[in-house]
Length: 91
Image (tube, rainbow, N blue to C red; front, side, top):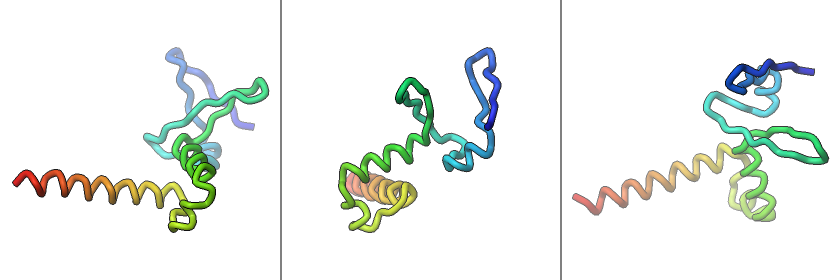
């Protein structure tokens, strides 16, 4: 069991063991969820990735995207292509 203290601003420090289990790093977002009268939190990026995977019913894996990092890389590549297209045409 891990314990954290709430500051006057309502903030807490997530214990390192929990951060490691949830693969949380500085700047990551977490989402708070309620289920069966309990409040819990999850890594927002991982939760979103898992929901996308469920929605796509294996299509992401078929395309070779097996982790949040794979999806993040895809997004970076798409952004780079869009950036290049945007500024290539403005010369």
